[in-house]
Amino acid sequence: MSVRRSILSSAAALLLLAIASHAGATDNEKFYPPWSHGDNNPVQERGLEFTVPEVDNLPDFHGNPMTSRLNILVGGNYFFAMAPLVHEFERQHPEFKGKIYYETIPPGLCYEQIKKNGVVTVGNMTWTVHADVYAAGLKRVTQAISEGYGNAPAVRYATNTLTIMIPKGNPAHITSLNDLGKPGVKLVMPNPEFEGIGRQIKVALAKAGGEELVKAVYETKVANGETILTHIHHRQSPLYLMLGRADAGVTWQSEAKFEEKVGNPISNVDIPDSQNVSAVYAATTLKKAKHAKAAKMWVDFLRSPKALAIFESYGFKPYTEGK
Image 1 (cartoon, rainbow, N blue to C red):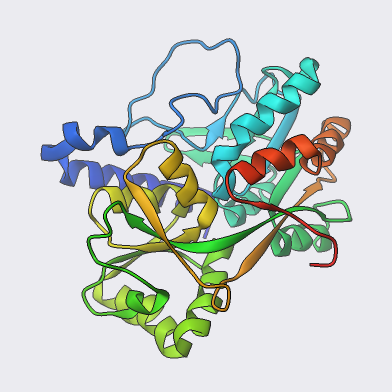
Image 2: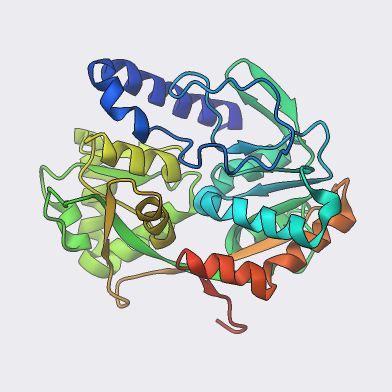
């Protein structure tokens, strides 16, 4: 699936959701992204403010690609950590203040954009960004290197684990992964086609309830409409839970922690270690980087104590060599 079709499908889904829930738009307005309220925008000098949630809204694109001196494509599962990371990097390197552009769409879509020479289309707008850094799960980054887009080695810096994200109050009384297979429980789940977390969720489901649970969640419930497959799970999962369209969805535990931090009515159910899956986050500088020196500075920064402290504040753990 192309970047354009994937992003447009997500945008269309959100717009249709908005139309369908128009009667409650006033009450639900606060649930729509960007939840950062502009804090994730690294540009210091802002022009005309034109953000209309549900209609004209780009929560996963940050900065000014026309003046940037560092372009980063990062898997969206830590979109919330990027603002403090950028701020700290700019504090250490003031010459980059307001000159960093980054995207936080799913890692598979980031990679598709890289392969399409940086061209991305959202709605009626098309622009080109030549990425300097690609950051995602280790498997994706290793793939980018092996296919000739990235420079070896893949730099590992943090790890993360899964959780079950639920609406505050847990109205469906979800207590475990096995509950996700029950008839009548509505789910919002990452699509394994282009979101790496989807494949890891399948591993966790198999540990908890075997292939029968995997089939129930990702086949039976998809067919009968009880599982919604996302295009951008880090946006769609919490949004659909807050709007009552789903009872639960598996995400990275850091994402649930962020939603609670900003006061959204989201909670989570822990997954036991015996059933959980750990992800390793990695980055690579790109061979076609136009800002190669800046790219290396950013990748080195990701392993610094300051950067790792930011990750840890959201529940990530520093990567330990050999794990």
